[in-house]
Image (cartoon, rainbow, N blue to C red; front, top):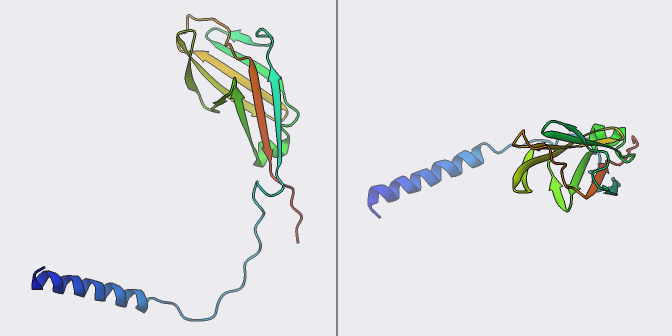
Length: 152
């Protein structure tokens, strides 16, 4: 290492060290903030519902799009407002946005939406000429509602 390079390196370290110590704050510590709400893992209400779909019962077709409305009492207003819902179809997690899956050699986008007490499964074929019922047999709905909190 040359003299100039070593000198630059030492000078850089010295400037960084002085800047770090020069900006240190001294003074009294501020007041303690309020305790925050506990997270989802602390007292959250978690429920799983298993639904077996019999021979496509309940699916409604609108061209290449199919939908199925399901009554799910565990999707409460608290879940909708500050929790969340996860859905699995035949063991595969379904996205709440469209994602294409291989089925019958064609692509099918499966997704879901929900409101209080209702889940809607959506299946849309990439090829609009297809009108085959989505072959989903078992739906697992997991709801997460945050714990209720009391004020201190």
